[in-house]
Image (cartoon, one colour):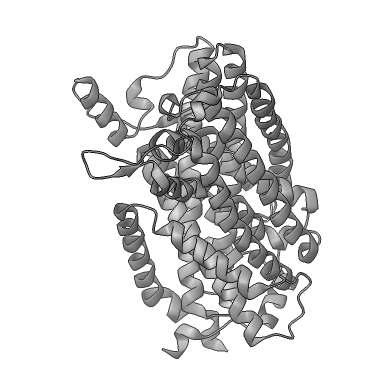
Length: 486
């Protein structure tokens, strides 16, 4: 039992920094762009449709306020940890040095869920916009059985009264993951440059949505702002205050970006200052943009008419702006690539950190390419798995799994920063959160509350995933941990 609570010494982290083979090439604004690149994407271009249409209505803006508030509290905690331990690994690394090995493993295992399913969700979203772009451009599209996962294809066929296809997969979603994987294997600097260009385009597209869409807002579409609660035939509830809370839990996936930037600490030029700046600044900017976009979309189009797959483009089409719909679709097709890039990049850096600690096989997960200086083996492995999952998984299931994994990780980091402040109050903290007990307590409460807003099936999947992780820990990780030799 004592092994479960053993902690990695802070001196060991400092040694990891000295011996790291990763290149320190990321400055303050490149880190901020990585964070913004992950935050602005699936949340605006896809999840706004699902969350508003089925759960929150015009009150989606309140859902973003709730999700953003919970993230902001957690972001302050992340920023303090990142200034103390400027290493890759995010919440996993922070927990290993404060709470103990098993807690850290559990965090890391859920971060795998967070990023893997996040990349899957965005890949499926990209496929939807790519298909729409081909249609708008008058280009012949792929057959339906190559554009949908088996579950979605079957549901669509049954609804249309046709025979479900014998075979179906989302081919564009699978292929785009491999494109992003290739970019990541080539190198972090090249990835950052690609990301900066895409983020600039994506932010411009979001600002265009807000500025151009304001003139077409019909305030009648905001009535009622919080639709009355409805219970469908399956017993699931929609709208009302509970719907606003459920929508907040769903769109929480969109805020994964600030967590992603903390995984890049060992590739940052000045991590103790630049990581906290990138985390907090990007979160404030992106939350503001999310709120504005949700108000514009639900003002342009009645929430019940918002398209679930491409809500932003469909909102402009509904008011006769076909040219704007085309521009937005192009921006989404390009912009969602940067989200996948950050998701898969972060995933491999967490694997790298866990492998260096002995909790995963180092020959696979800690192997650095001699020329590109990237963890190429784990990048290819993660790309292969994400590609397969994207081809066969419905977007709503992937989204909820990403959100619950993120919420759990954020709640745990809020608790961990409190423990470290109490146990090591004199530790040098380049960035120190004011009123930490209040901030961390509110972060913990908000994130747990949003976890319970998600449905029971999502909790069951989380439980199955967690049990699998615990088994792997006791079968492999506890025996191979570097701390066995301490």
